[in-house]
Length: 284
Image (cartoon, rainbow, N blue to C red; front, side):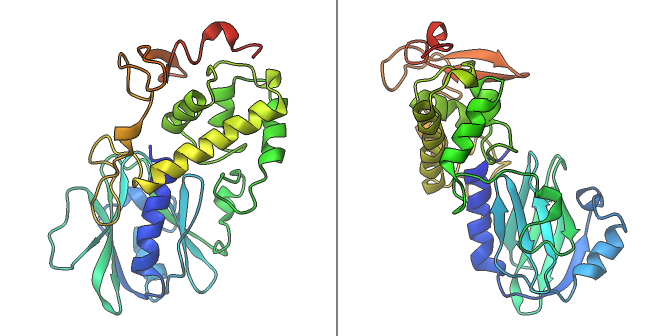
């Protein structure tokens, strides 16, 4: 699933492409991606027509496209959702689900989603922050993100550090990839108890998460397949710079020890056994 750097890359692409443009027509080609719009697909089409986009916004992994009238189009990319800018004469890519046409002509905006776990919905009054995602915590790129406050909350949780990093109500935008990369940068085992962290170590871990996501953003995010691309159809290339995630058996960039993969929450965790030893996680 796209994490903060991937969603922010999409947001930036949309910002230059749709801000200030008025929708002339919406075509829903498959109803499932607009299933959260309870009045139905036809109402989704008519309700959005004639509205003008303001600058797209994001919190964590959630993206919304505000309208100048105070409402917003809330988008969750799920596992495979994409926004693509295309000329109207271009054939639809496979799995094109929704098409937005504009009063000023080209290009049009298309929502593509192979697995359809994500979707689009209208959020009344949601231009500043849709109510549907108001419970989501601020992310490290938010100007109002308070690293000291979040570090304190992290230390008070009774869980493991990686589980805390993945808690979107504590800190949003971090998924499995960047959690593993942040823990490697902080030289911390993923199962270390949160309450054993000093304030300095907790802040160091949060800073590592922000740093790795900032580096990923500069590379356009991480793409392992064609399911994540930006609005122009280009893939990110931060996967070339990953230190541990997906690197099982390869040498640690810091010490040369082979990276290991271990089961975690029905997924996997990757770590360096030397830089992030299990025997130290409970007390370092």
